[in-house]
Length: 208
Length: 86
Image 1 (tube, each protein chain N blue to C red):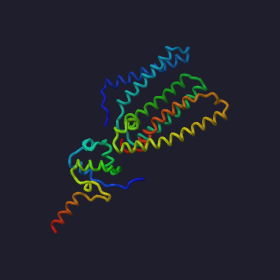
Image 2 (cartoon, rainbow over the protein chains, first blue to last red):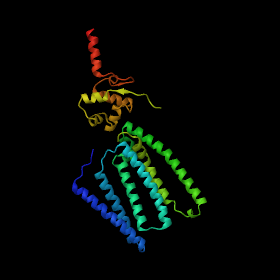
Image 3 (spheres, one colour):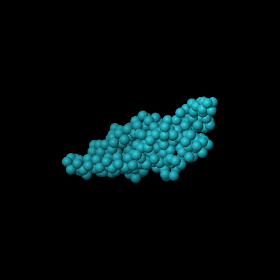
């Protein structure tokens, strides 16, 4: 089933997407080259919010509701790989300092994470399956959702343990690693905790 | 523990009554994708759902579900006719 979208809606979505992307780059550039100010920071946050909103709007309007199993698996793979790269990008940017090329890479990775999230989780409605009250699901949906939650709990614990182990080893044995912020890792872990059950469903369910 | 496969005639009965998957799903109170899983015999319904399905089709549960592969309805009719003829 393809979502019908009129031409003005498409143009509106794409225009907002382009404008907000431009604003995000502009505010980041200003913040990098000039003193950070409250105006700069609020402008940047506003532009980023607008960018995400127009991205959501455009892709929800454009993409198909049904995504094939190989398509969903590919989406899950891309989503987590781009997320891991985005995490690496944070540390590279922290170490080397931000420039326009690095900013473009970060922005591109962010777009890939958001787009793959929308395609895999939102258009397929798998996100709602794992986040809606049990009473809204039928018996099969309850069964598969519970299975996905159970598996994701175990996988998430293992991922978390390995990540903290790697972080601790790097902190102990790598001189340049002390004082590095763990906040990006926590942010990525929160995202993973929320998306992993739906990602498992996207990977396993034949029909969504 | 994975349950054994339960065979069913949901697909044939639904087509016979000119119902879409969505129509049947609404009548038995499940998501329409679940009807697809039931028809492909990839999901075994609960006893409650099995009875709801049998109520919608107006047939006894054992005519819709079986633990052995179900013969074609046309074949069963032919067999019945043969039995009556004997």
